[in-house]
Length: 421
Ligand SMILES: Cc1cc2nc3c(=O)[nH]c(=O)nc-3n(C[C@H](O)[C@H](O)[C@H](O)COP(=O)(O)OP(=O)(O)OC[C@H]3O[C@@H](n4cnc5c(N)ncnc54)[C@H](O)[C@@H]3O)c2cc1C
Image (tube, rainbow, N blue to C red; front, side, top):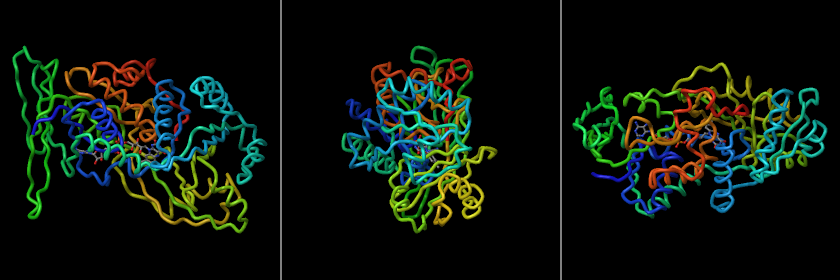
């Protein structure tokens, strides 16, 4: 098989990039994924929060563009513009958050600053101890979205424009070659290994991607060699595995994040109704929650947890030790609630908590878009549009050049996001 653009990874980012490329008229786009139902994809396991209220211009810009896109398709994506209420307990961080309002409001986000007493007056479902709060921000244009609907939309539209999605195709190999003109050398691969790049090969060109898949009915393994002009690494938290095998050292760490679904059982139905009409609420402890139908979706990341590919959900213990006490600090409604179920997924975390996108130095035809920490859904459209333009025209119009991996060699170029949950 021969392709113009091969996208490794069909999560929300790979699907969005496939759509953005085909929408520009790029033909012969192929997406390969080991499981397109999303068993290993963060895109199926996230919280559906969507905000543009970040601290770095590139993140604000790309998320604002994505939210605008969600608004245009609000019915298809169940986009609810209910805002983010961010409760602050740390004065220094609150001062910084207030300063960042200028940047955010330049993008029309209308972020307000609230005092602790404003919070309880305006959101009567909440009654946090005022001594825990120094203030809050409320960003009315942020909201909640159905991430699976968004991912499906990108894929459906991409397929309708000719992109092909190959399911159960595990990327097991890459062959690279020297630049045309120089002495060409192909380092072809072992089946189970992605070939290391020849260290003498200064400007590598990826020639082929080798995938392995299982063929029914007898489940024999087959390999497919896919020739490609351009390759895009959209492997999410798995991206460092690919990068390492082609000699690119990656800073991304896969880190487990757990989410609980909680049923509210309080008899004060008026306050419960008010609670269920909120958008995203972030507590000073870094717990976040939002209504999901008649229930509450709540998440919290244990700061001391070591990185790793861990999909175990700690269940009742996680709810009892980490979630319930923090929920109860936000609202007395949570004195009576019940843990229903939950799950865990992977954040792809970078040292500055911003994603990685753009071409990779040392290769003529290798791009990447991954490691969007807790931001991949809300950044998907903005990143995909800019990256597709970069691939197609050679440069992006949006400021995503700041997101290339090169920034990690100079801490002054890091795009630090401190309000990160
Ligand atoms: C608990 C949790 C809550 C979150 N909350 C939010 C939120 O509220 N808002 C938000 O915007 N973001 C949130 N995120 C982050 C968001 O889900 C991710 O940033 C986003 O889904 C990343 O998408 P992706 O396409 O880069 O990666 P993924 O969705 O992980 O896709 C990567 C794909 O690569 C495939 N793959 C891996 N290795 C191979 C291989 N060798 N060969 C072939 N295929 C391979 C996988 O099967 C997978 O489908 C959350 C994440 C988690 C875990």
